[in-house]
Length: 297
Image 1 (tube, rainbow, N blue to C red):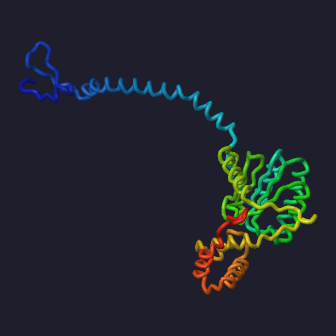
Image 2 (image 1 turned 180 degrees about the vertical axis):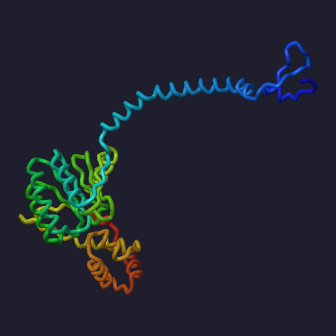
Image 3 (image 1 turned 90 degrees about the vertical axis):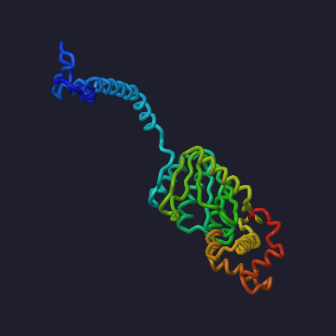
């Protein structure tokens, strides 16, 4: 074969010069030309594959050590589903509690069933020297079953204070594990937290609430605390001025909507207001929310 030869045929190795003949070319089988061109590329790929394999191999030991350590570290957050599961997990944590139990219980007075369940557990805790501090909302001061529980706890050295509003339920054991609701249904969904940063944050939040709260103490030898009606009513009025509905106020202060309406009605009669908007205006104008006493917000 002679004449003008396409450069691409030469580059691809499909044509080669005939030895001893100038300008003469012979065709090469495509399989041979293909093999000649592919061989150096394949060699590069093989070399790269070897490097990649060595890289993967070098990390195998590190991966094994990491997985082993991770398996040995306890998961810092557990989701608890069901009343029995929550109760059992809480009991186990309290049984291990050595120094301090912090509890914030929103929602007003507690049910007789829950109080009966909590009393022996909390008394046993106090009798073995664990400090117990509990926060309730002011409305428990007029709830007879809760007051009966409080009387027993105070007699054993526990401390109980009240606030107008508690942001959410929390139970903290030795500042090392905390229990909080896992959903709006506190009874059946909870979360147990062991992460030091989160537990520390919740503990500081509790301390902040405790500093603002009003103690329940003995009065004439009996545990009959003042109902703090003015403090509660001040909180109701503050939320009225903020535009909250009766339902929202009731939920946040741990009382019934009917009780909220009663507080609003009495202040309306005292100020002579004829509407909720006018009541809010008169409350602000007369400065009824200024200089709140300790424990109010």
